[in-house]
Amino acid sequence: MNEKSDDDMLTEAARMMRRHTDAGWTAMRPGLLDRARRAFRPSAAVRGRHEFGDFFVRADLLVSQLRVAVDAVDGARTADVICATGDDNVLTEVTVQIAADFGSYLPGLAIAVHAAAYATVTGLLGELAPPASAVRTHVHIGDITAP
Amino acid sequence: MSGGEQSDADLARQSKLGDRDAFAVIVSRHGPALYRYAYRLLDHPDAIEDIVQEAFLDAWRGLPRFRGDSSLRTWLFTLTRHRVQRHNTRQRPAGSIDVDDLADRIPDTAPEPVSRHLHRTLLDALDQALQGLPPRQRSAWLLREVEQLSYDEIATVLHTTSTVVRGLLERARANLAITLKEWR
Image 1 (cartoon, rainbow over the protein chains, first blue to last red):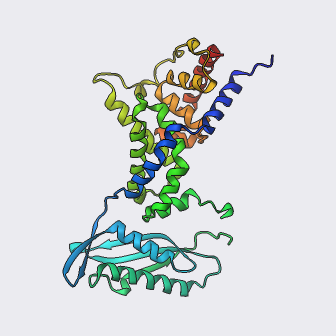
Image 2: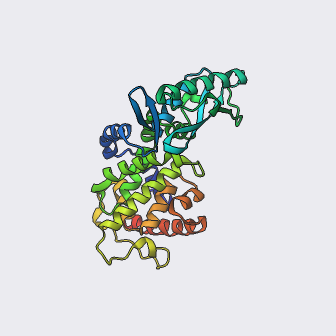
């Protein structure tokens, strides 16, 4: 009889365990995904102002909206969004870092990203949005990925 | 990127910026591993759903501060271990000894024989044998042999050094071999 060594048996058992998806996970996955989609992320408040007065927007919502707007610019992917607030939770500065598609004309891309980001903060925060000069776009050349 | 599958780093970056679809991919990709890891570390596995759910919610809340010093996967295992540890500590009676704190210092004893489980499958026997290991040995063995983390990654999850991890693994393998030999 070709009896397996202890090591072989442990290795085989570990492999079986790795390949096995627990039924419990399969059962809980839909509920967890639903919960994850609704999960609240504690976040600072950013003040906005519209015709009826001041209001607050969660910073993570602002960041999320900036990501969506910047990702919609052809050739750009949001790498990071950094917001700074001053007195009374007023947004004073936004820095958007992007990864650019290989071959993109970077000055044109940066201008398009800046416009998208500025339109987003203006749309969300109204007259308390920072001036266009305080919305910055950094194009970081960190890696080159073949298209 | 080849194959169209997004990297963990990309998914973490998108999730950090509030992309819930990206986070859902993280949940689906790493959920099975975190589930089987937590399940086997818990003193009371009936809490498994809460533990895995809380670990992922910790991840969602913590992603804005995740700097990528370790891989996303290692970080998720670390969050899960913290959740399990907190739960196990709460469930143990006051005055009980935390085996995690002592496991590296006390001599190993062979786990209980599993002769009564001769008819179980190999997987069941392994599960049984794992329950006989001190928690840190069990954790190290699962992360290495099942989840295939490196020694350094395991050291990150367990907040220790790779030298300690090596020792934990040696003792875990020896103990499991003894137990499974009796099963066989």
